[in-house]
Length: 309
Ligand code: NDP
Image (cartoon, rainbow, N blue to C red; front, side, top):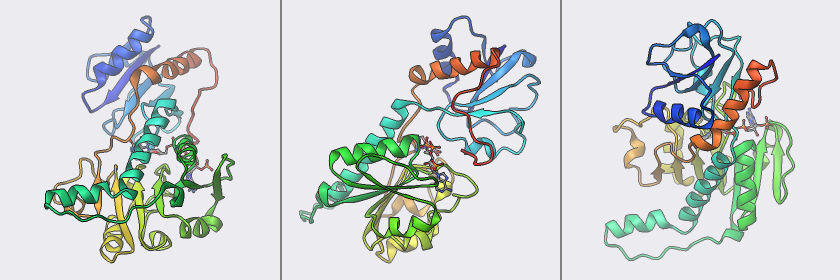
């Protein structure tokens, strides 16, 4: 039994060391080094090159090193019979919640606008909004969405959330399914997208959905670029229906420099870094699953292959 790490960034050594520091008896390889492919039972991956999951005859688990798994489903060459797991981690969820809180406060207290004014030597006070008067709506009430909703409610926001199945979260109004989407949207001032990217949710943030938000609403997309129809957002920003958007994720990353988001006054961008897996925090769950494989036990944090998340 052995683990292979497959990712295209500079973090292979970081993950390898974290795994070995947690359990020195493990056999861990980078996919870039010579390794015995028949020994590999688990692949710990993040945005792997297409085709790189082929050729492991004893692979039993594809472990995403993050919460999202859309990039795995996008690889037509992935071995389809192999179960996929994801990261569920309190730090990943609280980092996201903190990011969303920061973005919301910056918006309702006009901090981004004031930065633009400062650059232009402008002294121009603008009405601010109070937390207690602000309704935040969260699309997706999973590991990240549910914690974000709870935390925002604790701070004093009016919080509502929407998901596929009905959820009960203290101090959060919840809506479920397509029939309740319009009521949710028409009463949301700041919309936060925390849905997984699946065939069902691709292009979800489009003109007809965003038009259901009240005039002046603000969009925060921290899920995936594929949720958003970029051109539709630009139309609604330019015609004044939306007051702005903060985006962490894009169709293509890094976002090409010619993309209109870069120069748009109402778009605030962050470079897909709202919340990142902390290796020390998440490695124990990967190792637990590795030994579960050895013992023929059910894997933790398994993806539902039909739903795609
Ligand atoms: P989960 O799988 O835990 O939760 C997903 C939620 O979305 C669930 O509440 C689910 O509903 C709901 N949902 C999914 N499909 C639909 C649908 N068709 N209609 C209605 N509701 C739906 O995901 P996480 O909370 O862990 O993560 C969400 C996403 O955040 C990830 O997939 C990833 O893309 C993104 N992410 C972004 C990061 C960043 O740095 N920007 C970092 C980490 C994650 P139900 O519970 O009823 O099934």
